[in-house]
Length: 356
View 1 (tube, rainbow, N blue to C red):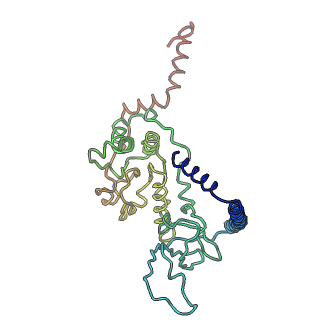
View 2: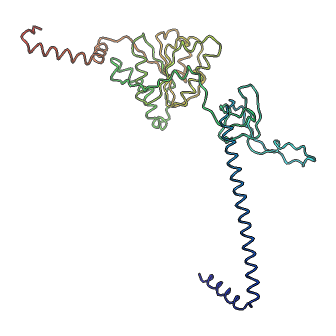
């Protein structure tokens, strides 16, 4: 504040010491400077309007190009370009693409062409990785957008859209099996942090074996309901395809879909259809939120390699129900029916015609 007042007083003193001609000359200089600044402002506004028009035109071109049908491609490799400092070339034949710095992309299109892109396009190259599915311009091959992963339609049909609603109370006579499945599958998913603190790695897979109709599928659905996990149901005969490699592709797509939908439980029924040969857990690395439940009624013909550590770590038998288990099953499945019988008997007892 004090410095401003001093400057104002200095300017007033300087103005008071100037003659009339000097003041007129100074005012003319200020008028000329104001006129120059106004011209500069007008020129800047015109340039700004011109740039806005160019930006709008470019945005419309980009929008038009993005509306055209995409050419689908896969990222093959991402390269880091660091051109060395070379002597300047004489003449006009200078390769500008070789002088670019930053990330470049090699992609393979659906037309079986392999393209090198020194300029990636509208997608940040740091967000790309080899194997990604992208949409490219059919003329310039610039990447316009990333596309969702492609899965076989048969794999998508394996996902159970409706969340399983089964509960352990709906299963009778399998209390021991329920406890074993809770320890092997449910607790590692619902209390993952506790297992990590203790340094315990939960089982990757569980094999349910026993005669048909003993509740293997129902138990798997109940586990998925308790863990709030996605439930993928596969059948062993589905994985045995006519063409070589088709079944393996189904398995790879199923596990990739399960990783994206994690936490997920993959239930493979009738695994004896494919488990009689060498089986390597489909080559999937350990994933803590992905569990495989396999079921079979022919455990005797399975490959022993299935039971190795790191594959199907736990075996749970589902035998024929005993008398106590059958009574429990009747209680679970005929609960309403039993209440109806009691009501009918009560009515008969109240009448004179009841001789039970």
